[in-house]
Amino acid sequence: MTTDLPHDLQSAMAFHEKLVKLLQHWKKHNQDHATTYRNWAENAKANNMAEAAAALEEAADLTVSINAKFERALRLIKSR
Image 1 (tube, one colour):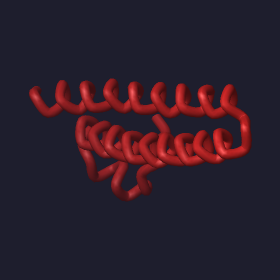
Image 2 (cartoon, rainbow, N blue to C red):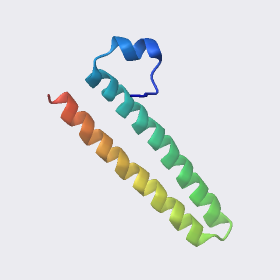
Image 3 (cartoon, helix red, strand yellow):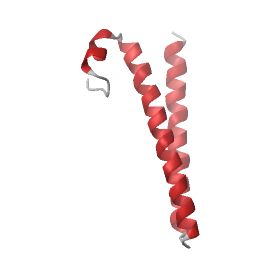
Image 4 (cartoon, rainbow, N blue to C red):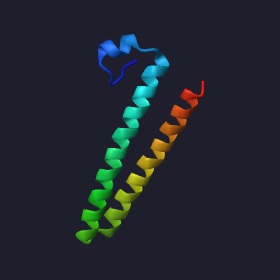
């Protein structure tokens, strides 16, 4: 299994701890992307690209919906 965690953390952590860390990282990463997509959607609107702006807004919304799945996974892990 490959992760985004440093090797020393990978070996010192239990599986569920690794997964929690990864899910938290992915949520933050996704939120950063969603913010960027929305900023570019605004730029597209300002440059008369309404359809492109709408597509970027939709991408941001989908990214946020993925975060809801990550949050659900976190709740399930923490409830064990």
